[in-house]
Image: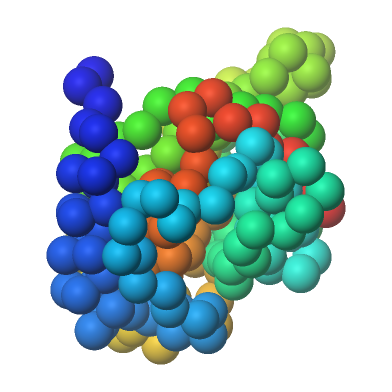
Length: 181
């Protein structure tokens, strides 16, 4: 996969923000217009707080950004198998970027990890996969307000499109992510 230079990504982000913020279904987060890649803060890991519906980007112990998120339709508890609609809990990393997904941008989470696989094998389950951090669906199936107030994913972590642009730009490849209850 070809990675674009940060300056090209910043220009793309400004364009995406202009289009995405207009119809954005999760408007609670403060919008930030990126004027230069020189002003991008460093991020070295991410933390999801499922109970609080927050994604936090960190540099060391310093919070760089915090975002409102939506989770899987059945958000309480650890993801155990395909089709349980839960968002996983544990230590993972961002394993892949997909600018052409069914959702507005997506970053793949390395679920299942070895612990998840052991649990699934023990119970003869398919652990599932394709857990992503992503924006809204490219083709909305519900009114925008639905995505703002509902946990609506199959187990992924969803943000507004404008917030997804920031997360896309600020997170390095292979960044660790902890998903906490």
